[in-house]
Amino acid sequence: MLVIENIVTAYGKIEALRGVSMEAQEGRITCLLGPNGAGKTTLMYTVAGILHARRGSVRLQGQELVGKPSSEIVRRGLALVPENRLTFPEVSVRENLIAGAYLRLTRDKAGVAEDLERQLVRFPRLRERINQDAGTLSGGEQQMLAVARALMARPRILLMDEPSLGLAPLVVEEIFRTIHELNAEGVTVLLVEQNAHMALQIAHHFYLLEQGRITFSGVPGALQEDEVIHRAYLGGSGASSH
Amino acid sequence: MADFWLEVADITQSAMDGLLYGSTYALIGIGFTLIFGVMRKVNIAFGAASLAGTYASLVAFQVLHAPAIVVFAVSVIASGVLGYVVYLTCFRFIAASNELGSLLATIGMLLFLDEVTVVSTQGMPMPYPVLFSDTMLFFGPFSLRSDLLLVFVASVVCTGILLAVIYRTRLGLATRVVSQQPVAALLCGISVPRTNATTFVLSGFLGGVAGSFIASSVGLLSPLLLIPVTLKGLVVTVIGGLGSIPGAIVAGLLVGLLENVFLYFRGVTERDIYVMLLLFIFLAVRPRGLLGRLHA
Image (tube, rainbow over all chains, first blue to last red):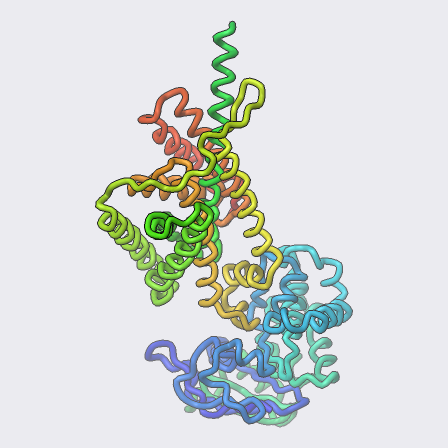
């Protein structure tokens, strides 16, 4: 569904991504694991059109995304739940959600209202806080809000960048349960994680990204879990030998 | 005793006049604060662009002999266009991280617009259409200039329209979220440059309203209006709290009121000294302003 080929993204002269190729298949949960600084967030921002690739291609259902503005990428059905959630702190939970459906606010009022209700059923905590400013929410609630906001765009593929970051274990479990449910409803998921243990439990396929390159691709179980964890946190032997 | 009550009546009269006139400061203050709220940057050229737009409306007045309401409308539109020009020249192509770059560009723009208006009018004050200048409304011992009352009512209406746009429309939602979290706004499909540009046009409209009202209540359009309008707009923005629209409204009325009271006691030459003192007191005692947020 999403095919990433030879993506190079650089900050000035420093190449953060040095030719990344990977794929997220329709209906699956694909995980991207890797240590801090490996380029995971850079890759997510490049795919979503926030950063611009120097070379390479990203295709969503055969259509090229590189060079398209982020609004066009959202319109084609790709939504990203960014690292650190990035909710809008000084507008209400309701308006955060409505902003997620920005591109069809004028044309599809009924559909937006319907989707808003669907998110509130999925995340009852958000309904309780619907008129509160998002900045007053707990970390876990903000993460749910960020996920719900992305879903308001009716994505065909949902990218999630470290949704478990900084959250209590119980909340992390809830987030992963939500990802699992969404996938069961047919949403294709590309999940970036450092929490390899949790990620491998729900992933259909996973990749390791180390120092701007994909160093492993396989199904969970193809690699010893402790090796995956080691490489996901520290960057392992695979990368240092390159 | 009678003298005392006469004095109280006079002060009250001054305060009321000031309050009404202060509504134009509120409009200018909202314009400054709107841009700051969205871009977290100060546009020093805002007052100059607004007055230049009002100058442009002189064409409708002098050449086409259009009625006052048309002249005002031209001022509003021209100021909106100039707002967009300021955005293009001072913000669009200067990196967001380069705060000093945009600030200096807007100072340059202020000087440029001022120079253009001075040169094109030979620096002479120009007559501007006046609305019911001779009509007064009387309330017991007090009188209200009906043109100032009209300015006040119209400013309230414009502010109401603006608040409705900001808090009730899709465009308003975009302006609010872009400033809070630009990356997330992009991820929602919102175009950040387009939203910023629209904010400049909106604030330009307000500036055009304020410019024509100020010129109309004086009956003249003069390059000498530029510095007071710019300074008072900035003072109002700071006292109200940077980025706070309700703050700019309250502060605009407050500055207008106090300024007239200072004028009553100390005369026109000293008036602005006290307005500036007010600014320093706020910066020292309450830097976030009347209604500003703590982190702003």
